[in-house]
Picture 1 (cartoon, rainbow, N blue to C red):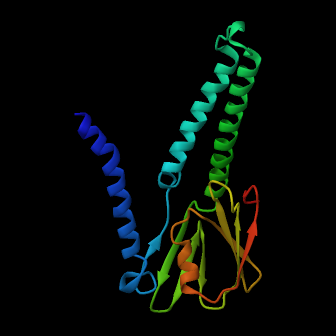
Picture 2 (cartoon, rainbow, N blue to C red):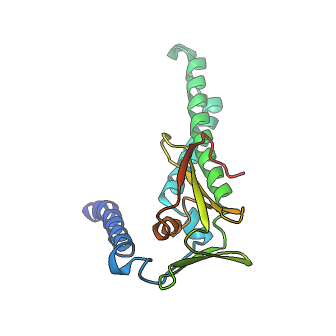
Picture 3 (spheres, rainbow, N blue to C red):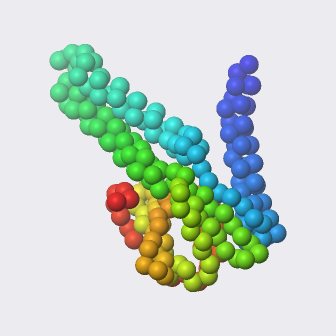
Length: 205
């Protein structure tokens, strides 16, 4: 029984990851790529928020909350040395764990507003894309996007990115890094000038 549990706990996630990688590769290059085949990309709230990273952050948030409670309630005998120092260390650890997890989860919620209801549709024959934002639609062809600005907290342990696309008519739109198919835009229009900006807190204003 223990062997089965170990097998399921180790090999099933690895197998699932390999399957997703193979599927992603199959659908992004060659004759099956979105440049050759018509595709639709969108994401719902369940797929957006229920990720391994978010599950891990929720566990960190819960653990941090336990440490916070423990910092004020766990009994520490005076003869153990420095009970105040022990409580201070627990409190500091809890603040770091809660703060970091809330920071990423809040950014995730902020970015969701820019992925909710968005649909990216490819038109290989015309070499055009159509983006749906709620009730409005935007048809893109070569030359419609004048530049791209990628904003990221590059260098952080969890890289978070969003991309701003500036249009020839003066408008712009923003897509977060979790939006599936966002990479297709630059795959279709390869000559767009791209800039990079580092932002410690990559909230979308």
